[in-house]
Image 1: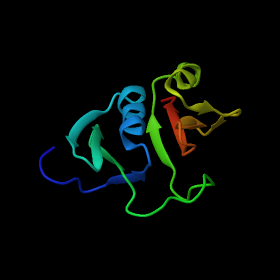
Image 2: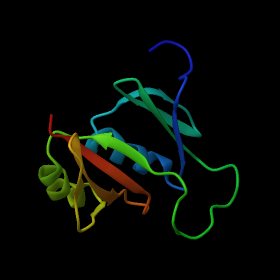
Image 3: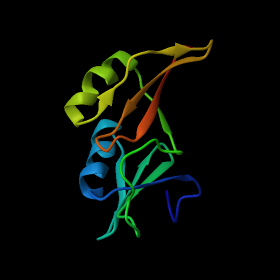
Length: 118
């Protein structure tokens, strides 16, 4: 990938170095750029910028942004998420193409995992 990303997500964090480590290691993302204020990560053309907030973050509550990632095995991902400081939630849902579940990163941001069945 060359130049700024055309799409992706910004995740604000008071501890952006540690949170970027979670995304880098759990989702096997590559570091594109690292500065004193953010870490830019990529996986298959999807860009996440984990950024120090330019404002005071409110207490943890439901986020209006939910990331989703494809994994090879939901069961394996749910087993490993706790090792990376996250949380696996109960329940899985499916359609004819993929099944999904929800997890959270170490700061409580919810993430949907997808396992394609086709």
